Image (cartoon, rainbow, N blue to C red; front, top):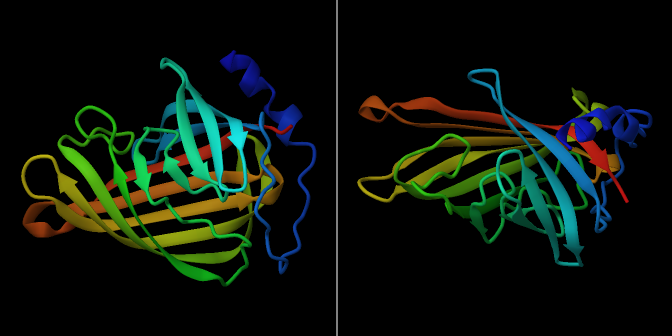
Length: 231
């Protein structure tokens, strides 16, 4: 099944990449039940593929998007989002996010800026909120400043797209299940392609206190689109 999905990439995504007007606002996508995306997830520190997952929409209305997530080697799980693709239950690690990530606010326009604050609660044993296990972490608070930066041409396994770059930077506060927490820095970059109705690339990186409270790079993960099958 996985081979068939990846083999369909160029048939599904490569032939037509419409150019968006650079100055036109980007409207909220018209997501439909059955819309499907597949992403590969890379650890940029080791340049290692840490997994590929498929996301298929099962329900959509004016307020929310629900999806089923299929990840090789695991049973299917659920993910949920606002109608603007701001996660409330994440696809990759099933973390619960309150109120939601708030990183996308439609209509999107180059030059827009806003703030996004949310808490991510782990649902995995040992408190794992990202792909890499972080022993004892129970929750992480994010305070971001978000900016819609510019249009970019970007290549991912699914092909080449014209995408809107959205950057979010700010503080994170990590609470520990045992012992003290830590304050650090986090950054998220989203490349949103209107024709795909979702992002084609998603980068997350953070830095956490190490010796004497000095911040050191910790996580650097990226998702890249390998398949889009619209309805």
